[in-house]
Image 1 (cartoon, rainbow over the protein chains, first blue to last red):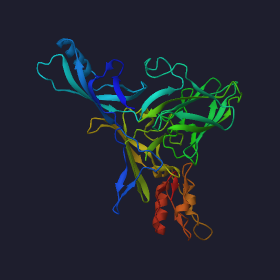
Image 2: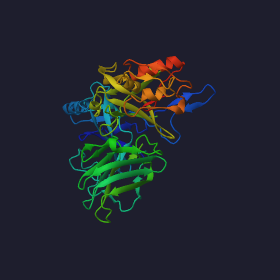
Image 3: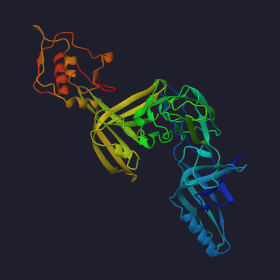
Image 4: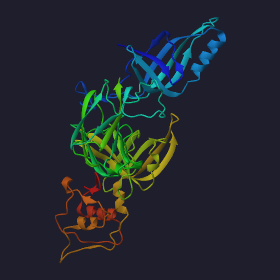
Length: 286
Length: 182
């Protein structure tokens, strides 16, 4: 299976004729110190994955046009994206879409004189997202900037009724990379406020929110931005990490099934009315 | 290894919806018998930049295989917007570490004396004037002098009072993680 980079933003389709595309991973940022005793000391914890930073993506191809004027128009359209940050899309050979945020760093071309109907071009992007995002899991809104072909599905909402305490919630990352940008939204039911939420992942995460989440309000924990809001009000102060918490990103998804353990106090505990946990995330690919 | 910075009010309430996670560096120099210095830089367009204000407390944390550990802390004195060599707008944040908190209170005219001799709890007596949350970290060596201390003060702040005792007994002290004198 391989990938094809095919679109930048909503309107720029990358040249596919005679295309050559960099579909590598980029370079992980390592923290390695050479040892005077031989070998090297790796500062990244053995269980942690060294992540890449911004990484280069080179794309080249040929622009075709039916007239010299059209070729100028096509080329100028391409040049007009210089410096822009947009979603860069790729699809695998089965047609599945993935995207990252990227910025167009350079547009290059060497013209062959008198050749007015085609032009070899190359573009250098810098990938900004830690992983390529594939199918979204969770609710999304049509006005969030996504396009109708962004691999989103209207009816997918990963809503879990938390009827037990604690309750193990399996969360599947279909990709091959760690996902850090997931979001939890917790709501009450039965007109009973929620007073605490404990989120655990064995060996990594142990964090507790305490406070008052009124019925009808949302407690939103964004693990990508490391943000906690109770009905839009800052509540990071109400988070406490346990002695077993070692995850710098609070909570992330490893490839495969992740068992997240949730304990909610209050919120009704009714088998139909809540409390509820909504989980939003993209599966992540390198 | 990643680090993050919590911003607190002067009384220790954590602010914002989350920590500062865009800082490019953190530096904290501890000093013996004095308040150390810290500094760090964040991009000016950090969404939590407005949390950084003079007099507020910042605490840097890292995680280790054994859990979360405080890496340093301090009280913001200076906020300097700057454009670095790469043309990136950043905010340089600096100040003294938490020991400066001990300069905000005076021991007044405290007199250290007992029944016919000095006192055996000079450090605890002085630290009794400290703002809430301060303690002496006996686990790393700070102990009361083994012999009685006589002393009289005339409005010295707590840090200076500790210095006077330290000089008298030939010892030193420094900041320990949190609000502890070690």
